[in-house]
Image 1 (cartoon, rainbow, N blue to C red):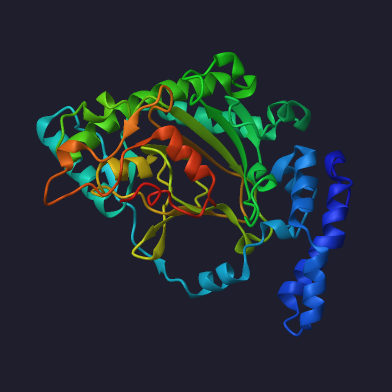
Image 2 (cartoon, rainbow, N blue to C red):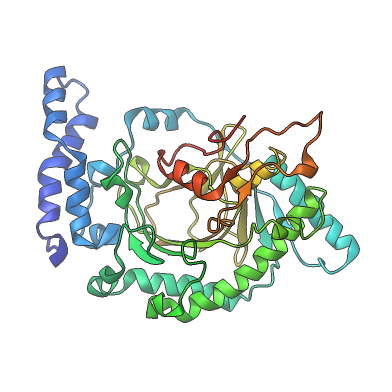
Length: 397
């Protein structure tokens, strides 16, 4: 097998050491305890992370090298794999909300009612007839594909672990500073206006700049519409959440999930909730997103040109638990790449602004369940924890 230049040293190192350990650990149930201990002593996950990180080629580089077994750092802990075998899978489907007819009184009321029910019971819904042209959606998916599939020498210019950088490309960089976490099978282009409050067009990679800016303009307008509908679903004035500046912060995570040779051993994205007000997700037709509902994983089947909306932790807190932010994940697949673009509506982090349960929703019968907090403090605490934890308990009374 001929290896691509970036991996001519990394792949043999991983194959010769870690794949042997993987096989011994998961195939030989009769392995003596002392031998197991010896294998564990020989293995340092940080070495594996650094070896992959040094290439700047991400998961796609591993796949392009012809790798047929995934490195150990991607393999989920044995207890997780065992739990997966015993967990039932839901046949229920995430609700679908059709925005056509929103301009009419009866249609508007029906949409508000459907969003209320979905936000209370699921925390997720698919959105059709949302007004964003299919050409814009397809262009965005294609632009992100082109970014991740361009030459590594061009792509690596954006490779960074600096969270203050507005535009950066990375793959599992959090593992360099956080122990005890399993790597996930994806590469990400992260574009954020959290620090400066504005995304400079020149910072966007040229290969996807035009399509990104066009999509961003459309999805920002849709976000305002959704915040109005969610305000009404809470029994508030349509401008309530926007007046609270819930719409001010914006961040996009543009993920690329290559085909995985052993998808049953790893995940594309680990289970988590979103530490934001609202997430609007664009995905292709590959599928893989799953939502936890009634302690079962429910597949979110792709609907062509639909968008997926989910309630974030911050909106659950503001609603005083009327709306729910639910655990979700992305499973790895043998087919791919899967491409998705998550647009996070984050609220104001600078200048400092306090958030907490909405006063109009609080009463003697319905006391506040959370203390007030700064968004910046919330993010700092959330990011210091493993991804598979929700942030809802950080400020719970």
